[in-house]
Length: 282
Image (cartoon, rainbow, N blue to C red; front, side, top):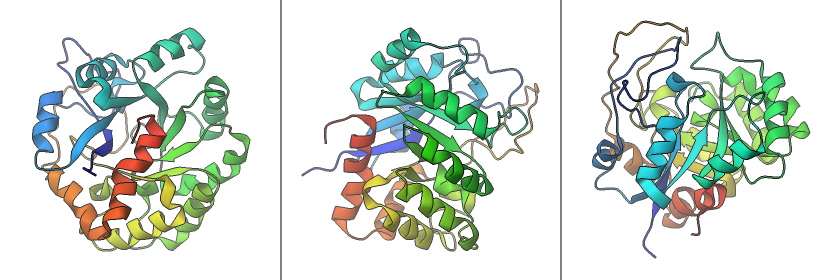
């Protein structure tokens, strides 16, 4: 069977005149569109994508939704929502445009982030009965808080970017990740360059295998294109444009073969698992 890999976490940024950034925000970046994405992953088996709402747009999901329209059925989306100002009608409209999850970003916008024990139950009540999930990007120390909250949630959690665990000192947080995954959470093997020097950084392959072994049917992979610049998480209104990190996106994909030499394992992580999570047929 031909592998139709799914990139489970990438962003689209549009022209600022059509899609203005939030005020304040953590960074300002140039446009990064659909055509540029396909160019970046040329030479890979990637055929489908999950467009994730970036923090720079806050809850204005228009750029992400228009990107979903441009990708067509090759895409699913993860939005950012205010649970206090959205109802079933709005959720149904988002679902019709192929949104399948809500992101809670506790790391890129630290100062503006709501307490996790306040926002997650609200989102859970909003999404209960749907096939959506709550995606969380957080510092590794927050994983212990999620362990306490998870039994109260009825929709699954998806953990961004290896749970932000340090591959050179993982023991402190791997146990919390394990509890979450064994409790039904999913984990994204993505953004390896955010926790190390890249997919070949010290300890990354071992951490990827450790997390994958926790629950092989709930592991997915993602590129995190276009690789937003490093930033402190402090909010600002500055218009200084920061450039994306100059990474080989196709190389991030091909590194999975080094992490997991078994072709069946790669098919599970790159295709079968994410197809189930995001509502595609395999």
